[in-house]
Amino acid sequence: MKLKITAIGNSAGVILPKELLARLRVGKGDVLYAVEVQDGIKITPYDPKFAAQMEVVEQVMRDRRELLRKLSES
Image 1 (cartoon, rainbow, N blue to C red):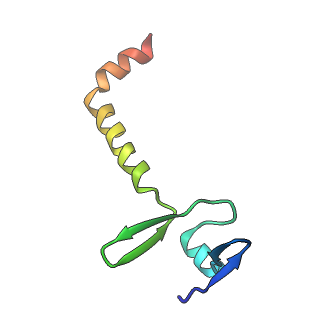
Image 2: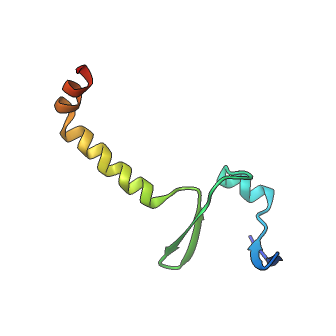
């Protein structure tokens, strides 16, 4: 899909066609992330930093399941 850079006030931007928005499952007001990959830039609604943080949280929850259960009973 070809995108053109256009002037938006004093900045530059890219208009995303509605077909691309539908494929990304995003709309006005949603946040997209530009992630550098080996062969270019990937635009995604997925936040890789947040996903990495959630993996740590899930691991702690698995490792400390009994402690968390006891804390929830207090």
